[in-house]
Amino acid sequence: MLVETSADDRRGTGSAGRKWGLRTVDVARRAGYSVQQIRDLEQAGVLPPADRTPAGYRRYTERHVHAALAYRAFAAGIGPVEAKRVLRAALRGGPAVLVLLDAAHARLHAERRELALAREAAGAIAAEPIAAPRASDAMSITELAAALGIRPSTLRHWDAEGLVPAHRSGPRSTRTYSPDAVRDARITHQLRRAGYRIGPLRALLDQLRRTGRGSDVEAGLAARSTSIDDRSRALLQGAAALDRLLDGGP
Image 1 (spheres, rainbow, N blue to C red):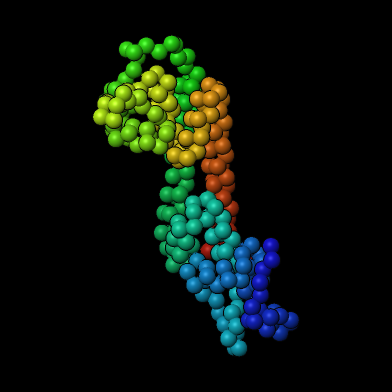
Image 2: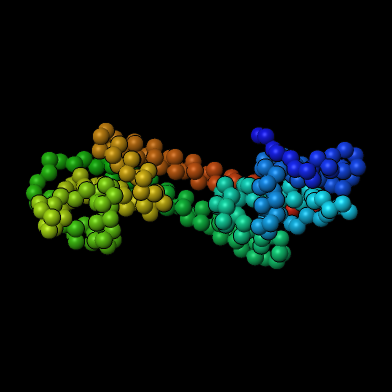
């Protein structure tokens, strides 16, 4: 990646500049950011304030590199907003940063647990055979909402989003759900609990309707599992860089 340099960086080159520590461009290159991003992170309180040379140029240290690397990893694991909270808490000192990290790991653990339950439930639901539907097999919106333990408004929202289409004989008629729609509602309920967003879930259900293969649902859930693994690994990497930052070591 190309990293732009500034006048401060160019004036700080050479042996005379090196003795004052790391330049902005040095931190940027090692952390995978641009020079402007490093300045922005410092201004946002994500990096420790940089010292200045007698000539007024920024002087960075290894602590700034560790902070930038920690933020980069945490941003991938928990998002940039929460990552800033973690770094600011770390720089303030005290146990607040540990509380934030514990909460982040707990959220990922909850996601992983919900995903495991969703994979088990969705696999069983998708594999259920659906016999030739009869009129008596249909469920009203009230009946289906009660069976799933959700509000009728949730089913109406899923209908509007194309997740679980309901049958209506007229604009003012009551929504009814065929056995296929009931199956889709059960799968939608489990996957929403596992954190699936509307867009990917709609595509997954469309594919299930076209192919009738429960393996399509399992493939989508496997991708979700990989995402959780990646975020968990990012938290681990961020914690390693953060530990070096707090220790003040190289």
